[in-house]
Structures are given as C-alpha cells and as structure tokens.
Image (cartoon, rainbow, N blue to C red; front, side, top):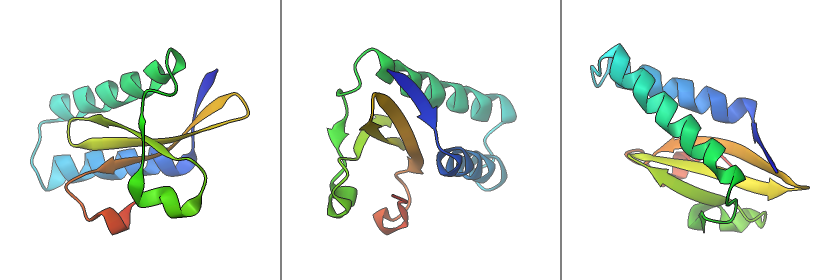
Length: 101
C-alpha cells in the first residue's frame, strides 16, 4: 500500500497551519512540528491502514472514510484499489459540518 495526499487534504493542512500562525499565534517552529507530526501519522497508515475508526460525519457518503486523531486534528482517509487516500486534515475545534468529504 501507498499513501496518496489529495490536493484538498494538502490545502486543508496549509489553511489550518496558517490559522495557527496568524490567529492562534503559534510560533513557526511549533506549526512546522505539528505539520510533521500529522504527515508522519498519515504515512504510518502504510503499516496498518485499517487502524482508523470509521468517520461518522462522512458515513452518508457511503465510501468508508476513516479517521485518525492526532492532537486537535482528524486525518480523514479512504482505502481504495490498494492505495490510502488522505482526503482531509480537519481541525476538530471547527464545526463538523465544515468537514470536506
């Protein structure tokens, strides 16, 4: 298996990091550390892609979205055709209705 990051997931990650830097006033070094932790956790799915729980807020899509939790973030992903698609990095301090599927 291989991890594939969708454009949407990378955009979500960058938006979240910008929010941390500008609004939360998190130092750049800390924001970069958070980014690395999230990407490392997502890459870890190669070892056990089924470790994440099904994401209840996306069940209506019927695609089997799963989630990992890392700090305040959910890493949303799908397993299809032998690939692990990371579809979103979602800051759980937001409303669940903002989650992209």
